[in-house]
Image (cartoon, rainbow, N blue to C red; front, top):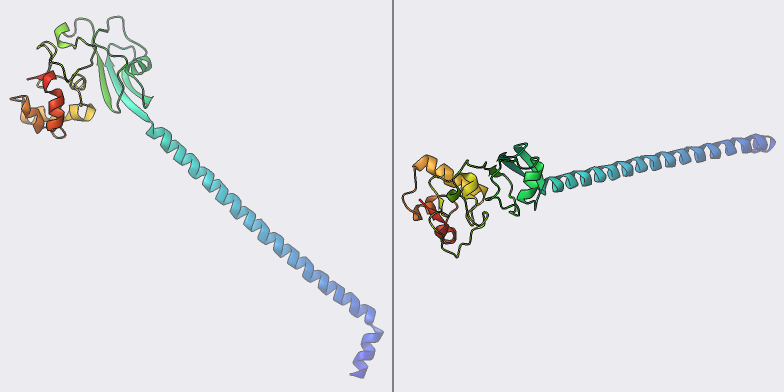
Length: 214
């Protein structure tokens, strides 16, 4: 033991240097380890932020898509076809998207202020294509509370999809249901028979009975 103490005293500079090297090495390793952990945490944080940003962009795209509607416009327009329009668009917007009306378009029956619905089919007649009495005299707007003359009534056995949609409470889906019912079961034998169509109940019938014939 005494020999060991004497050896340490004689070589205390060497021992001190070794201790300094050992402490310095431990400090350096600890610092590098801390930097490594910090780098990993920063990478994970950056990845989470990017993921949240991507999710926000996806949600925004879905919301934008949900605010659009699609309409099919045919007939006397310059570029017939299916067009994507913002919700709240009017008939005049669909006509504009299709390049405008042709000179021979029958404009009297068009209600350009009519609000569009998704999947709506619009047909613009040409002059002479349909008799005047087959078209509503009020530009496509029906008044459920007022009686109509026979020339203004819509025939539920012969009206097309667009004509049926001029009826109060009848949108694209119900108009298609009426046409499908006719194709499957034949012509309606009475006004009340329209209530056999899925989606048309007594309340809807009361609102449109003064506007239809068969």
